[in-house]
Image (tube, rainbow, N blue to C red; front, side, top):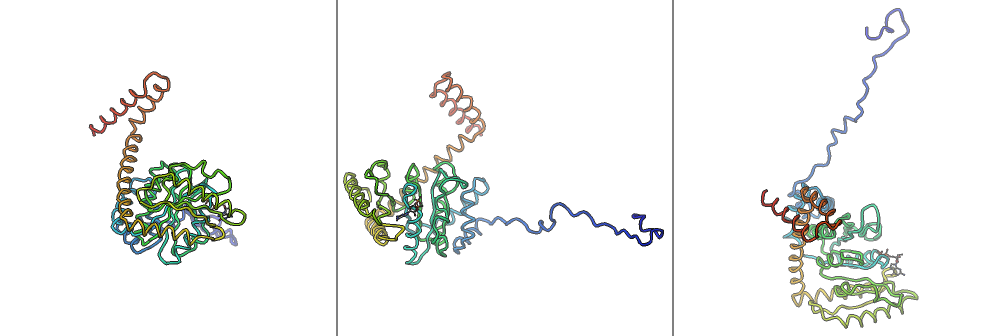
Amino acid sequence: MEHPENDQQYAGLAVNKGIQQPPSVNPYMKARRRRRTLSAAEYVEGILRGDITILSQAVTLVESHNPDHEAIAQEVIEKCLPYSGKSIRVGITGVPGAGKSTSIDVFGLHVLKQGGKLAVLAIDPSSERSKGSILGDKTRMEKLSVHPNAFIRPSPSAGSLGGVARKTRETIVLCEAAGFDKIFVETVGVGQSETAVHSMVDFFLLIQLAGTGDELQGIKRGIMEMADGIVINKADGDNVDRANLAATQFRNALHLFPLPPSGWAPKVLTYSGYYEIGIAEVWQMIYDYFDFVKGNGYFQEKRRQQELYWMYETIDEKLKDSFYQNPTIEEMLAAKRRLVLDSRQSSFIAAHEVLDRYFALLQNR
Ligand code: GDP
């Protein structure tokens, strides 16, 4: 007998058969399978339908470093390409605190008043999701983030600038295929990322601040040359005069630059994102630019040139990855580093030996 306590002689005492110890893992969990990965065709179908959930998932795929994901992402992008391109792409830059998020919130609502859909993307190679200013973050754009026709996506997480920027550019393709006809790309105006943004937008807006008296200092000439419009933010309250003065200084400085290839002389305006003063004027300038460059053919020409730029960028990025991520090369480079640091081999010879090895590896594949 399994439980002797149940014998007649112990009448009044009954021991029931125990229950089995439950498994430590909930068996019902098995029924809840992981979300099925969609096929490339399913992603494309969802995107073309304007399904935001599927669009977000596809963007996550674009941002992934997993080679399987990358392969599907590339297929999705290629299938979406014929449906892309029908948008206005505006790059917005300015140092932290210039008022980018406040302005994008207001600019976004302004352009959406005329209908259509807006995607706000970002390039911030310095940011990781856990720290720093995460550009394009929803919490920084309170009104837009609850707008049904706005899609806000923070910067792909830190990586090489080329890689981060390429992912943002690929995301533009997906957003356009999903029917977004207005794209904002935000970046911090402090580094190389402006060049990357410039090579994926039609209009490049530089947000500046007035008040220090030496506005022109500290602005890289290259950034000013890229700008199609410079806007002085926070032209409100006591700051209006200073903003106007800064605008004059910028206009004078711009006169010294040759006319850009677009034929469009960059304009300088003042506005207040916070108090919503001068927003319509800023956008009138941007719409005037689009009329101008669509009229003289520069709009299409620039987009063609951008395609070329990204072809070379992608080649550069892939070549570097293939080289630096090759285990033999990694090992050899570590050894060469020591030799070069100790002045036991010249950098030139070390580089050539590593490269020769790499090319030999390629040939023997
Ligand atoms: P970002 O770092 O460039 O995104 O700048 P934010 O949009 O976060 O703005 C930085 C600070 O400037 C915030 O405290 C804003 O409230 C303030 N700010 C932004 N736009 C204006 C403006 O037009 N006028 C004034 N007075 N303050 C502004």
